[in-house]
Amino acid sequence: MKKYIRHFRRRGNTVFFLVMGVLFAGLGTVALFFVEPAVWAAVCYAAAFLLLAIPPFIIHATYGVDGSALRVRVFFPKRIPLSQIGALVVASYDSYRRWKGFLKETFVSSSGTVYDVPSVTFLRECDGEELDMCDTRTYTRLTYKKQFLFDAALDFDFLRELADAGYAGKIYISENIRAQYGPVFEEIFGKGDPRVEEYGRLPKKLRDRYGH
Image (cartoon, rainbow, N blue to C red):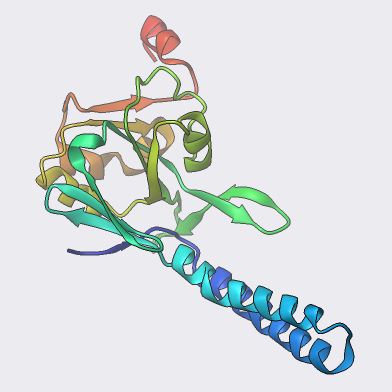
């Protein structure tokens, strides 16, 4: 099984938590010799352990197609049968930037064109009527939090594997991502695939009424 990385921005976050963990370990050592009671040293060491041990599992989580299932690994591996995934929502990938909040992640191609990093959100089901606010993975997760299974930065090789594995659910693609990567989606799913549906910032009923 080929593994795909869940998060886009990993190096900076890894370094941040590594530095914070070492910092708390240093504070614990100082507290051990110069601060009473010793409980403060224990608190600092515990914080250092948590910062060094837990974030790497989250930052470097993986996912992939394993036969007829989606296999994800955060702390422990988990298999989600494809039959239990009713919909994929493909939108812009955003992540939390310290002091700045949630921002879209982008990259620059060799030609100098700026692209949004695409994301994929796996849902148990989705009626497609409430996607007008789901232009990023965070808004998608908040909107469908009761149906949420997993989300990740999208690798198009994964999407090809998923299609080859017989995934039969819906694929909702935001108009922004479709405009940037349309040819890739057509290569994977072909034209006119009934599983694939584009959505935008207008509610579906208005889009259908006015032909947008």
